[in-house]
Length: 263
Image (spheres, rainbow, N blue to C red):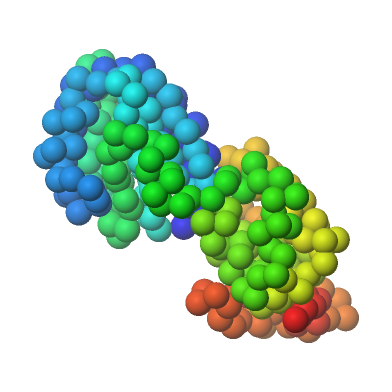
């Protein structure tokens, strides 16, 4: 599933293939992923416009139109972008595409239809109403610690809460906690500032490195951050096996003994 680094890769791709080109039309094949209007209405509002920029916040990509409005592209579990020039190259699960005046196309491919596309008249109003937290790469250590103090929620639950900080998903959360040797079920409020600082540092370091390596959820290299994440694996000498449990309602991997449970 695309998380912050993967969506940043989509942002770069979108800016390369979608900016500063007048939109001739929007061809909608399946409007299930349009969440605040019909596909037909979306097409009417976009036609004739031009994308002039984009903003990424966590897992959300906001495409800016020349009228000051935005299109939210939330990729769900299987969303992807595909630029092409021939209709014979249409992605198999394309739900809609932008058709530009220069003859190029930018398709939104989504096999499982869990993506969310919204047309937004007021971006700031949407962010406020959705209570979307600060980007995980922007949140300061002071703010991160403040959000954890006194919380009874697990540290993994805190990392996954997009209203607390935006961008970390299941895989990166497990990898961050593995690298910092903290059990995912540890209580956020029980962690001292030193441990919270190590999580904050590892989170921002890992996400930054993933961005630099142009992370894409369909093609992770074998030595990616969670190559240890195999049940029964023994990644650390003198420690136990990798086990699987549920934390914050999500399938969670941890290394027994290596990661300390703090309650």
